[in-house]
Length: 147
Ligand SMILES: [Zn+2]
Ligand SMILES: [Zn+2]
Ligand SMILES: [Zn+2]
Image (tube, rainbow, N blue to C red):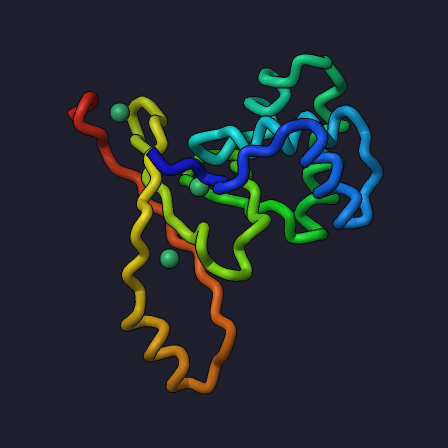
């Protein structure tokens, strides 16, 4: 199945990504990028914190995520919970990795929707004179196990 991120980063590659974006190669930053790049679904800060081998203060992760967001390295995804989730957005400009998600309201399982079929909207919006459109659209429902 498709992952949220097309690049599975190892520690070295994550360090290179940080350098490319002009960020310090700290152990925590590297670990966060590695974890995000291997995730099948967008992760909350708490989930990222749990999956880090080197334990650090959760406030460090919040701070690092804010830096990643400022550099447009990650996407914030809202799936109708009282917290945000994040996924890597490193190859987003080319739109190769563009996808949507659906979260089960009972068990919180998240599935990827690989195909995006919003041409009709893009056509209408381009008639309004807009270019370089971006969109986010997320779904919730009840999965087959829970229904
Ligand atoms: Zn995703
Ligand atoms: Zn479910
Ligand atoms: Zn889309």
